Amino acid sequence: MEIAFCRIDDRLIHGQVATVWTKVTGCNRIMCCSDEVAKDEMRKKLLLQVAPPGIKAYVVPVEKACEAYKNPKYDAFKTLFLFTKPADVVRAVKGGIPFKSVNLGGMTYKDGDTLISSAVAVNPDDVKALLELQDMGIEVEIRKLASEPKGDLMSALKAKGLA
Image (cartoon, rainbow, N blue to C red; front, side, top):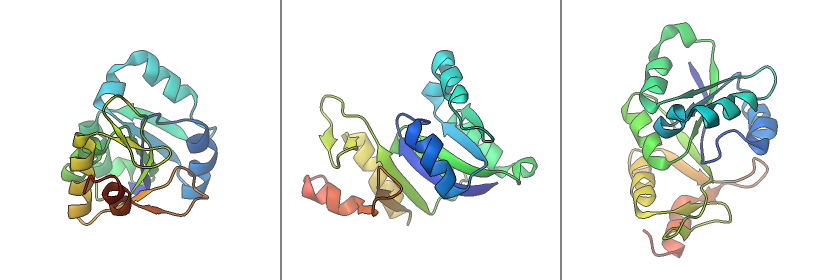
């Protein structure tokens, strides 16, 4: 399986992903990797319905995504991996998916979070996981839209006193 792109966006498949990121990455598959979402039949069904024409989508737990990545029967897949949170990306890397870069695209603000960009809010667990990805040598860039320049994670975290 070829990695087309890895993005953290808690909405998973939505307009920008379906119309822009799929074209920019040239993917032929979308894999939504989330234990919680994979158990939520309604959300799973909705995500599968909004996949763009010609691109097959899957909603799977993180462990199953790791197994699929290693399975030679999926070698023809050029996959856009979508995650809802940074900790799941860490699990996927530890599970054998060798991401070189991760796009931090959208994480909704919740009480207690810190906004580090116009579209990304993080909690302490998110910060810990993002720093762990960087320590693994993985680029973590902040960018909501494909047309935007890549934003630097460390600069954003330092600006808010989080790193």
